[in-house]
Structures are given as C-alpha cells and as structure tokens.
Length: 100
Figure 1: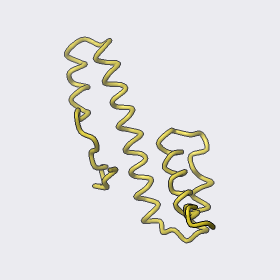
Figure 2 (figure 1 turned 90 degrees about the horizontal axis):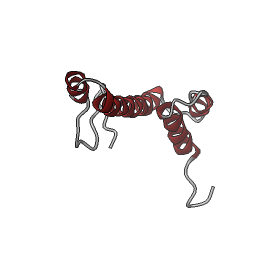
Figure 3 (figure 1 turned 45 degrees about the horizontal axis):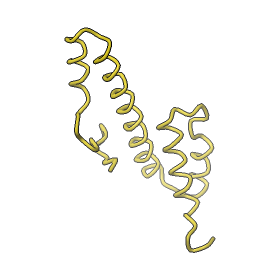
Figure 4 (figure 1 turned 30 degrees about the vertical axis):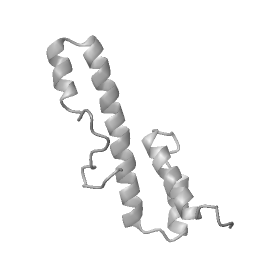
C-alpha cells in the first residue's frame, strides 16, 4: 500500500455507504462481508449505514417535496415541504449521527 492509498476498510466503508445511499441492487452486502473480515466493528458499520440511509431518505423527501410543490394542490405541497428542512446543509440522523 502506497502513502496515498486509502486503507481497504475506508474504501469498503465508502463503497457500502454509496451502495446504500443510491439504492444499489447489490445493497453493499459484499462490502459488509469485507468490513467484517477486516475487523471493522458492527458499531462503526452501523454509523455508516445510519448516515447513508438518512441521506438517501432525505434526498427522496426533497425530490417528493419538489414534485408535490409543482403538481399537488397548494395545501398538500405546503405540508410536504414542511417535512424537509430547507436551507440546512445537514440534519442529524434519527440516531443523532452527524452526516457532515
């Protein structure tokens, strides 16, 4: 491993998060197995999974809100828009993990 190469556990964590956040059909199961083989704790994996799911869900809410604002009656659009915090760069996950 060179000085500029990332540790395999970091690569696997990033890949796992990307798979989850993008709803990839393979679900990151290969990375999960690799992380466990590398000795990464379930607690660390859980934080990454929590953050990736939060970002995925937040993106879906924002897309739904924008669609509803353009299409649905004004009352429904306002209710949907209230579920997403506008102007916030990052809201913590339901478990309190920061995604920033």
